[in-house]
Length: 120
Image 1 (cartoon, rainbow, N blue to C red):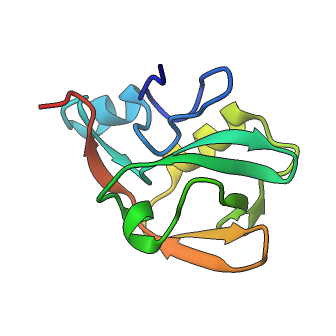
Image 2 (image 1 turned 90 degrees about the vertical axis):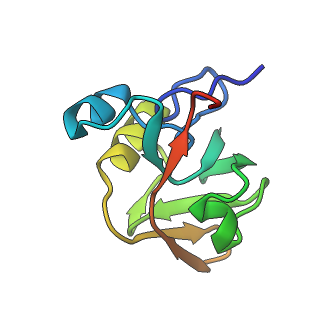
């Protein structure tokens, strides 16, 4: 069972963009169930991260991101040799348009959207 918790931080699966940090929601005054997110979960990969889940209707889904894609850079910052925690922090702090570079060099630009984690 995958937990959809704040940005990344599982042993193998990161809810990265599924639900950024509770602290963000608290600081922004949002309900903790609604958090800005890219709408992806990922596994570590030797070249960056591998997408293993995409939330239907999220900005990532709308931008064409699919499970199995390898992301090597976020906004020009290489993900290779970064820990999941470092990547999570990076994503939490992102605002505005976000450019993801795929392993083939292609780029996808998207923005965080609110994702409700409460199921209501």
